[in-house]
Amino acid sequence: MMSSANFGFTQGDVLLVTGAGSGIGRATALRAAELGLAVSAWDLNPDGLAQTVDQIRAAGGRVHSWVADVSDPDAVAAGFSDAAAAVGSIRFLHNNAGPASSSPLPFDRALQICVTSAHTMTEQWATQLPDSASAMVVTTSVAGNRIGTESDWYSASKAALMGYVRHLAAHRAHEFRSNGVAPGMTDTPRLASFTESEIGQRALARIPLHRLASPDDIAYAVLFLLSPLSAYTNGVFLPVDGGWTVTQ
Image (tube, rainbow, N blue to C red; front, top):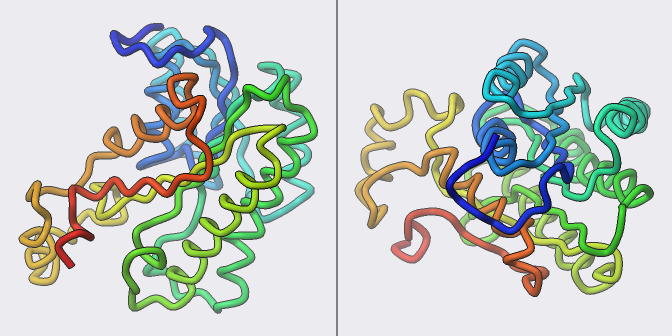
C-alpha cells in the first residue's frame, strides 16, 4: 500500500493515531498507511474506528485498532501493550483525540480530557521507543494560541498543549522530537453545517483561500512533521489555516 508521495518513512514503522475514527485522525491514519506505515488507530467511537480500519485494510494496509478513552490511564496502558503485540514498537505518535469545542464540559474536566490525556499517552509511548528517531505531533489549534474562542476550556487546553510541546522539545529531544500542528477551520463532521450559517459565511470570507481545510490538508502537515524530512524541526507551532489568522 503505497502513495506517490514520499516522506522518507521506513516501510513498516508504526504510527499511533488517537481520534482516528473520523476527521483529522482518520485522514492521518489513512495517508500514513498509504505511505507504508503500520497504523495503530485509537478512538472512543467503535463504529467510526471500524470504518477507518476497514478502509486501511481494503487498501492493503497493516492496522491495529483500540477502542479507548485516552483520559483513562489504565485503558492507555492496556492499549500500548495490545498494540506492541500486534504491530511492534511505536516510533511515531499523533496525539489528536479531543472533544469538540462546542461540548458543554466543565473547565477542569475538559483540561483533564485534553491535556492530561496527551501527557498520559506521551509518557506511556516514551517507555517503548525504538530509538531517538521517533517523533510526536499534537493537534493543537489556532484557538488559544493565535485567537480566543468563546469556549474557555478549548482555548486554554489548546494553549496548554502547545506549552507541553515546547517543554518536550526543549528537555526531551534526546528521546524524540515534538511539534504542534494548529488547524484552523477544518471540514470535519464537527463543522458539517457551519459553512451554511451566517457566522460560517463571515468566517470563510476572511480566509484568503476562501475554503475550509480538508482533513488531508492537516494530515499531510502532521506526516511531514513526523517524517525524516522534518528531522531538524522540533518545538514548532505550525498553523494550517489558509491564512485565516493573519487576516484577524
